[in-house]
Image (cartoon, rainbow, N blue to C red; front, side):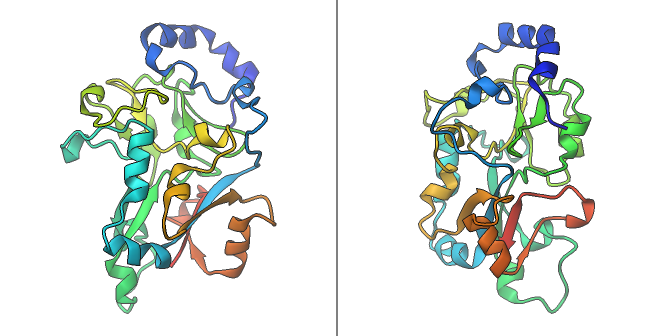
Length: 258
C-alpha cells in the first residue's frame, strides 16, 4: 500500500494541522517525490539488509555496540532509563524470541545462546501500513517503511499490528533524554510512534545506513533485494539465510546468516 503524491495531498488538512503542532519534524514527509531529487540519492526497488551473525558475534562479545551507539546519536534516540518506556530502533533479542518458530532442542549452542540484532523489518507487505488510520505510516516506492510524524496521532494501531515489536511509543517528551543532540536530525515529541527508518536520510543523499557503515566486522550488508547483482542478493544466493516469522507472510527485508 504505497502512498502516491495525489493521496498524500488529499490529506492536506490533517497534514497542515500536523505542521502547526510539530515543527521540529518538518520535512520528513518522505514519500513525497520532491524529497528524492538529490542527484546523489541511491536508487533501488526494495532496500534490505543481510546480517551475518557469525561475523557479528565475535565483535559483540568483545563489547562492540557501534551500530547501536551510532544509530542512537544519528537519530536523537533518547535514553529514558526505563525499560517500559524505552525507545528502540536497533537492539538485540535472544534467538528464541527473534525466531520462535525456528528452534529445536538440538540446536547449536552458539546460535541458541547468542544475541541477534533486530530492527524494523521493512516488510514488503507491512501490516502496520494497512492498519494506520491516518496513513502516517507508509511504504516508499523503494520498500522503506516510514512514519510521518505530522500525521501520527499516537493511536498505536501500528504497534499492535507489528508482529516483531519493532515500534516504540513516546510516552513522554524524549528531548530531555537525548544525551548527544544531532542538530541535523529532527527530534520527536510525546505521543508519536517511531522506529528504524533504514537511514532514509542517508540513502537519499547517496550513503548507506549508518549501522552498515560503522560495523567493524562488515557484518551488515545493505542492498537492493530486487537487483540480482547487488551484494545483498549475492549473499542470499550463496549463503543460507533465515527471516523472522516468515510464516506470517509479511515478507521481511531483513535476512540473517547464522
